Image (tube, rainbow, N blue to C red):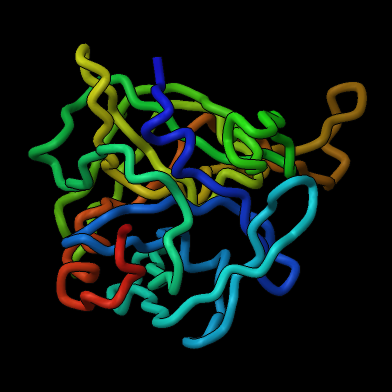
Length: 227
């Protein structure tokens, strides 16, 4: 079961028409919003990101913006004001924090869909939760580990957290959803190739290890001071 510790930290976000997911992490007494780089491409410091609340997009001010320089699909936004409750979570994101075949959960807003919770979640929608297992991961290259999970991803989960949950309901963020692997399969008519193709979801979720976010937040020390 995925507890409120991460549910109430996960937000539906928008930037320049791109829709996705972001989630908060707390490092050294400061709060940051983590997401996928392609969701907030072009976002500059001292600007804002749109967050869905009470059925409308509201601007949330951002101080610093960091995009991974290693090629990883990771971004970290230093918030000017605390966005979420400070429910305890761990942020690790290297292979010492998970293992092959371990069950994972990933959270987000597929096609913009969500569950309304009203005052229970302070007007913010509750994300969808999907599950899978760690199928494979790469060696660390340039700062972040590439993680493949068996699970059916959809557009809108990009930027959402991939987490493990212990028997004691302890949440550990191991990665950020980037995309899913697809194949271009042929369209057949009566067994004859039409020359057309369609994209088939392979069921492989692609994520980038969260450790790079933790390192950046520690070095930056510029997020919103937690009350």
